[in-house]
Image 1 (tube, rainbow, N blue to C red):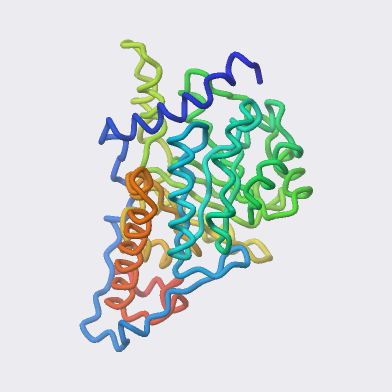
Image 2 (cartoon, rainbow, N blue to C red):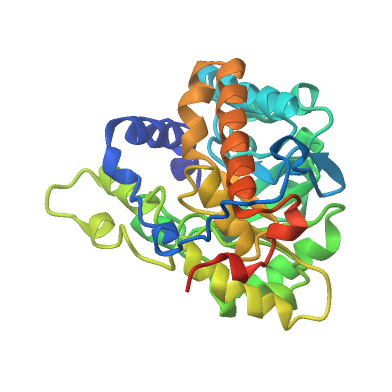
Length: 349
């Protein structure tokens, strides 16, 4: 990495937030959930108030299978406030949280403050986050350990974003031989490593590489929600350059990525955790993801405006998702997550 590029990291994160505020079409609304019709039960034979949505993730108990997905990584008062609202909201609502890319910590030490969140979320899972491509750009075990340490994290996301890097004006595009570098990090860090796309989906081939590298946690992060390609298009600032628009709908829809991941993981002899994210906008989408095999559901964009407001707004938004999820379970006749998980009989053929 060169200093000339790194000086722009913090500002780039603020550019991303502005783009999300300014361009409604960044949310593509096409993750595939509308293709799945569920079977309504007029006699659900369960007590709504007795429905059990509790689960565990990375050794910690949660109220329901929600992960606040990676949103913000950077420095400055606004980023710090957003992350603290998210962390405090996650703690009160008892859900997990992942931070955005922590790369900026290694060029701007003041950025550590925006990731120092354990005091705000002492009992729920927190996930650190480094771009996997940075393992080819000079970052390594030392930086991964530092990212984990500042959060006292329960896990480390290595995010995969080849499309975003290809479109990003200052993108890092050397993804060669990352599988072996991921394997080395997974072997040497003290917490589970999770592989995550950022909006184009993990294929069965990607999961196979991850499994060979020792990864057991996968976040498919399919397309149809936030388009990082479109966000980066807005930053290219050339009227004749539409690369980000051409690829704004590239990748596997979230539903298809989940359907591809399930047999890929089933073929592996060992425990694995599947996280669904990418365009999940309500509790019904979450229920569909669990039916398709997801253990956890990652949500980002629906919580961003709340996080820009207050901790209370974050808690309110999470409780809305929880109520929607519980209501979907009730209307499907599912009293526990075990009744919902992998239950293809709930899908209308």
